[in-house]
Amino acid sequence: MSPAPVSGSWADVLGQGRLPRFILICLAVWLNAADSLITATIMPSVGRSLAGYAYFGWATAGYLMGSVLAAASSGVLAVRLGLRSATIAAALLYTGGCALSAAAPEIFTFLAGRILQGFGGGWLAGLASVAIGLLFANRLLPRVYSAISSVWGVAVLIGPMLGGLFADAGSWRAVFWLFAAQSAIVAAVARAILPAETTTASQAVAWRALGVIGIGIVLIAFGDLADNFLGAAALIALGIGAFVLALKLDARAAVRLFPLGSGDPRTVHGAGYATLFLFYVATMGLTVYGPAVLQTLRGLSALAAGYVVGAEALFWTALALPVAGLSGNWPNRLIRLGAAVIFVGLLACALVFDDGHLVWVVIATGSVGAGFGLSYAFISQAILGALTDEERAIGGAGIATVRLTGAAAGSAMAAAVANLAGFANGFSCQAARTAGVWVFLAALPLALLACLSAWRMGAERAVNPRLLPM
Image (cartoon, rainbow, N blue to C red; front, side, top):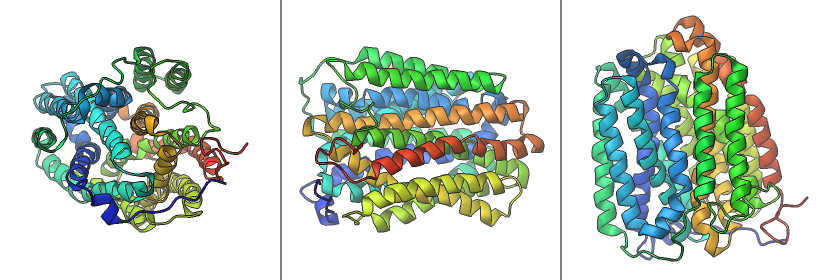
């Protein structure tokens, strides 16, 4: 058996000059965390202002389209430009996208801005994962990822408040100007504290795999606009199939986006990637449509609805920090338990979201986050721990890539279900009630697959830690 993972201390995490760079990683994560929470809170106001109800899901799907392509290439970008130049460029691109969305006179300009934000945010997320994989030893990763989860906790407290206050005041555009200023600060900090060196270890780019991933994301995004569920499901399935094809092409390529064996569920990192992908496909409906359903059915303000859905991230943080120091057999157990809790949380959302007591809605939403809190850091640790030192950079970027691809697929699937429920024609009570059930029911089969994948991943490692027992 391979040795059980051991846990490092917080002094190890922040020592040897890593503190300033760790703070920068947290700033990059903050942009991603706050963006998702605030945008979900203000989107009903954006839809009314720009007459874009039919494209409601594209505000998230468009952002994720750019994010997936960017995150998939972030490992290459870090190699070619170095972390400092790559981070500065990503932050400035995000700034430009925010400015375009803030100034948008109609929905399509707004969505173009969201796509640019996605590219900038995806590079920032991917570069943060690359930096974590390069700067921190495997024993430190649960504490690093639990600390990153605490950034989400802060975003839960501040994000819905900002989004709700701006939305209720009719000033949703100011949110994007605020984000533009924050990303400019990230660029300035990156210039000040990150090393300038670059490497010519690999100047090649895996254009073929990136192109196939891009086609897949476009197919997934167009799934929103299909006028029937079968058409939407077919487009989403083709998009996911393109991502699987990209993994197979990547495995045979001289220049790879992912570590060798990433498409094989028998490997630890292959099973880990599959589990994270399925987690995000299954849970994105809560993020994208939860606030809209609550505002429509229960008359909640944007602020209150944002905080109810924000319970997911709050519970994530509340569970991630206490378990971060566990080692031995606990990581395997918590990977399995976390997947089961996510499944139960989604089932509870389907039962209570439309007319259950608001306390039960908070508990159901929080249960989804609790599942992530129990398992996410240990899944990430297992993925990176199974890789060689040479593969950790692209392995870290791969975590961001599969997470964002799953989120894009999940938001498109949720949008297809919600549009068929009637959301494309406006937020009526009947449409919200139907969507508040079926968005979650449609996700349950995928959540069950995530449980199976997590159960396999949570098995004891074989002598070769890159392979799971058959």
